[in-house]
Length: 111
Image (cartoon, rainbow, N blue to C red):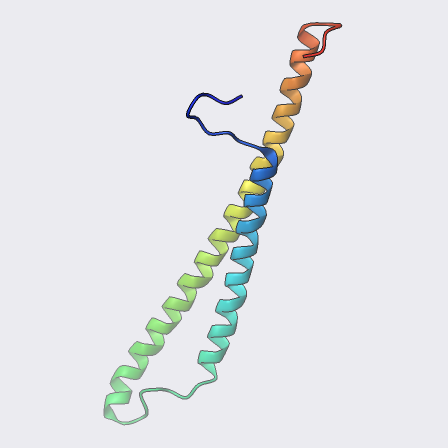
């Protein structure tokens, strides 16, 4: 049931949204892994001179933190997709239970 100006929730829309979020999280995790591997295969951009020895470790630390943040973000998006898919199943079961309860409330009549 939808209130005027309210939000209409559908099992199919929730399922599609959950699937979409799950795919985005998985795709992002894969892209981060590829990106991290590519960065690891490159030479140190700061070199090994005096400036490089000062900036290089800071750059490496920031790079690791950034990669970790993207991995965490991808996992969070994937987890949100799983949660929305669970909500979709719960919503579908609740709609079915509500329809059955309404039908049982008035025996012999279709609701």
